[in-house]
Amino acid sequence: MDRDTYLVVMVIACGLIATLSMMLFSEPDPQAVNRKQTMERSAWRDSTPSLPDERDVQLVTGDEPIQELLVKAGCAVCHSIPGVPAAKGRQGPRLVLGETGPRRLSDPNYHGSATTVREYIMESILTPDAYIVPGYPEHVMPRWYGRKLNATALNRIVRYLETLTSFE
Ligand code: HEC
Image 1 (cartoon, rainbow, N blue to C red):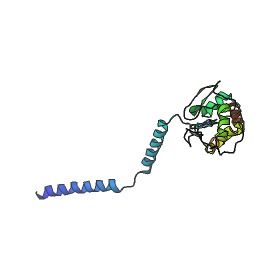
Image 2 (tube, helix red, strand yellow):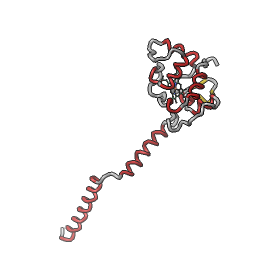
Image 3 (cartoon, rainbow, N blue to C red):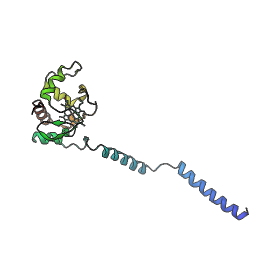
Image 4 (tube, rainbow, N blue to C red):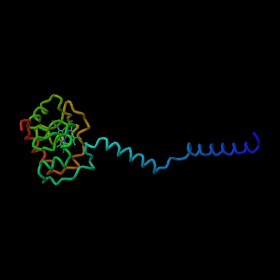
């Protein structure tokens, strides 16, 4: 190898080493990291589009027709509810509390603080962890409804649900 060729090879080698070390040791661009995380988050949300997020659930006044109330609050996404044609969800049990309510209260595994079906329904919405319906996963029924629904809306929902049986 003559002197000139040797120099050219050296220059190329130095360039390669410099580029490699920049790639290895440079700080990641924080904006690029943010962009990547945002993309991952939205990919996750796109893959589970059916479950309502607290931010997506609309505020209700409580004066809406009961069907509209249950749909806007997101209940219809996870529950099927007699009298609410749009409510065909399968994540949670069919809401027929007129029938299932007394059964939950007499379940020996029930350790919540409700003594009436009305109280049981209110408890299921506000503190779902108090009792998990057998056969269903915990932590799926949202725990933020106490922040999202006002007293009017909650009472209307409870009074509607307590009347429901599967024969309607
Ligand atoms: C993301 C899905 C999801 C949403 C949204 C949801 N629920 Fe549920 N719900 C569940 C699951 C799962 C259970 C059963 C597990 C448990 O007991 O927590 C459940 C349980 C219940 C129960 C107890 C039912 C029984 O048979 O004992 C009631 C009542 C209830 N939900 C009412 C509501 C109401 C009212 C809304 C809307 C304000 C609502 N849920 C929104 C998933 C959901």
